[in-house]
Image 1 (cartoon, rainbow over the protein chains, first blue to last red):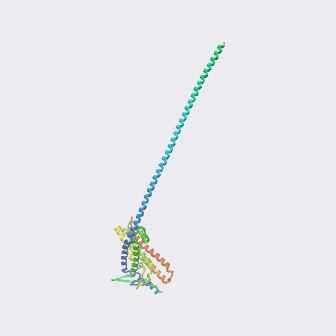
Image 2 (cartoon, rainbow over the protein chains, first blue to last red):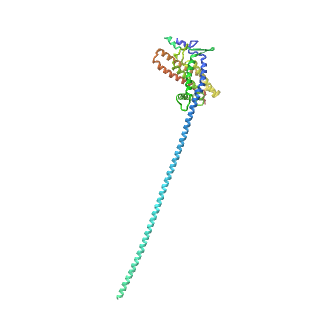
Image 3 (spheres, helix red, strand yellow):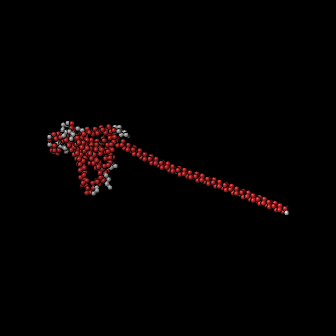
Length: 153
Length: 236
């Protein structure tokens, strides 16, 4: 029967250990060398080459990205400085136009004041001239009156 | 009915006589067929290696990656490269033997004595593999750490010494008997079921067998790598 064949038999049996063992060991060792040269080495070379390629590409892309970021930051600062410059120019122009306006206004004021003064002086001189004339006429008239009165006497 | 059980021919071998040594012919026959198929498969896949893997090369690269991960996690970054071919060969040999034994209807080929089957269902094969693993971890430990390898036996305390020595015997024993027992049991269960209920019922058990076969290959390779990793590990 089955169970009795397991251990008992001198010839055969499940635990019949013989020269199969060392020969199989030699075969596995040989297989290790064959598979190493046929499978592990060539496939490893290709896979590791690709891994290197990929990691190199990733590093390169990272470098490029950081470069792009740096350039972007550069451009941003340039833009910022251009903006402040533009603002400075605009405010300068505003100040200048303000100054010009004020100057023009002052000039106009002065001129107006001057002509006003002149007109006033003229009016004054004319007034005094007219007064003089009037007083002279009054004198003439009074003299005339006096003369008439004297003559009639 | 019992005579039909015997038709499973448990423990019978096809003996080859070479000089005055006798070997189990059926083990070598199946292993040659399976390893031949494996080598043909691998040479086809590695014939034209391209940077953009296609077809078989893809599969082989996946396999290579799988074995590298296995070796690297168990042995460690430093020396896994030296042992990857050995671990990979163990995995491939056990896997191909187990699956070949389970998938190919060997029983259709009649032998004068014994029957063809998974090479790993023979105790000689599994002991050979287990002893190779033992030699490997001794060699790995001694070549990496020299005599300091034996510090491992008194680590963390000298009390461990007898247990560590015992382990050197239990490691190959458990490795060989686990694989042998699982594969033989699977073959027997499928054989008995096929004999009792030839239709449908054996199919789930056959799938279970395929699962066990793959798991056993993984366990064997992982344990071998773990033992080597344990031997080369630096204690601080």
